[in-house]
Length: 262
Image (cartoon, rainbow, N blue to C red; front, side):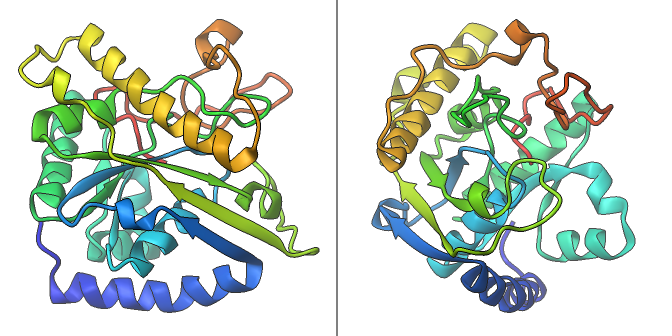
């Protein structure tokens, strides 16, 4: 999926809107950006607030790596947003197995063309009460093993103070700092040639989540929990919007291998 002139123009327009707004909303500190591979790669960030994609996208675009996200197919059906997403070569994810396969193929085309594909391994905003990364889904690991593309763990912290998880308004004052820390690509070479069964994918996903958690612990200056939060163990759904009083919305996202979209 080579960047067309149209997609480059759309990225420029979106960046022209988003970057000044992000610079107004918060200061930024990006570390480890030299670790971003020159070729195609999979970016795997933690996910603790709805504006995370803009934070990570801002960083990647400034590094001259236009970001491509796996996004819920329903977003592509809205009149204005859908047109913007399609023009910017973002990738819709459907619930069906066939749709999931199409999404993986499109993601692979981005990586093969030297692009950056962003997959949130948690699949949705973390359920962890203290915003540590929770148990991951296998989409990023599956794509990495299939394509051989490097997985770059990314931790971000601070944006949640500007727009807390499930908030309805921004908290601009006092001014906060959004920090992003890019880690070394995760070594998944041991999984090459192994069957893509659940055991393999879960093991590879745990390695990715460990790398993200370690980076976040560095940013926070804290020790992460000894056990990663598992929504199933707390009677929570793994997808969609979680409401702290115990109710869940019906919103859900794909579970068939591309479960890393916002």
